[in-house]
Length: 119
Image (cartoon, rainbow, N blue to C red; front, side, top):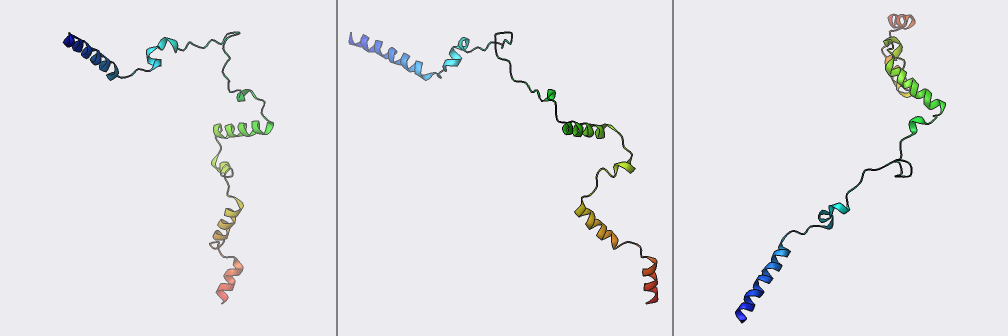
């Protein structure tokens, strides 16, 4: 009888080993019905509505409206190149450097020419 007891004990150990050898499943994957998400219902008395971006409906200050309109007009209108050249000018410091450089290549005046030829 002891041989039967041994043979009975061995399968019990083998079954226990098989249970632990498989990958463990977490609670979420074994019970998906508990975690299913219902669609949001925004009717009266139900879910709170999400926050929306209302900045488009704000009454903006006058200077903000004007600068935005000006930018849009500049993009949409075709301006002749002779006028458009004045929309992008150099700042004072760079303009001063350019004028100083160009002054060296200015044609000489009549007085400077007389002075150069007499010497």
